[in-house]
Length: 138
Image (cartoon, rainbow, N blue to C red; front, side):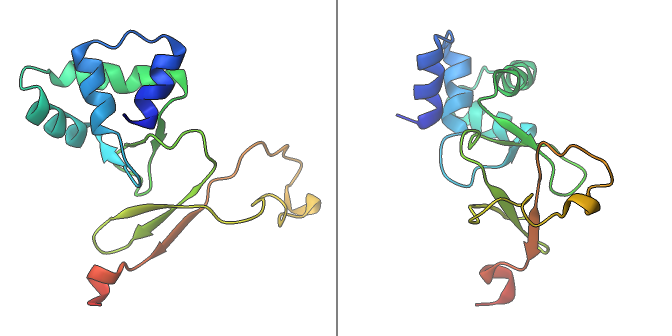
């Protein structure tokens, strides 16, 4: 059973067949699907699931704080079920593959107080970019 399904059960969230399929699609490490990708994978498991149901379910999961909505390319929103462990993203500049990375330390610790321009900083998002081994030819 997936970590996401366990968390949703623990919250008492009603798991209809459609919601369960969306949660199953989001199961796994380094999952960062767009809504259309979630829908395509969900229809393979439950052919009658509608695009609207997938979008609504993703919206609910984000509202619950069980799934993160991330954008690493400024275009398509992607859905990340790794919502309860702080992490950053490593993105291939060629193929767009995304991997979760868990650097040590606090990214805010390196930002000096005078470099915050009076902001009270609550979160930081760091995206590392490079080329994955497949695109690098190795």
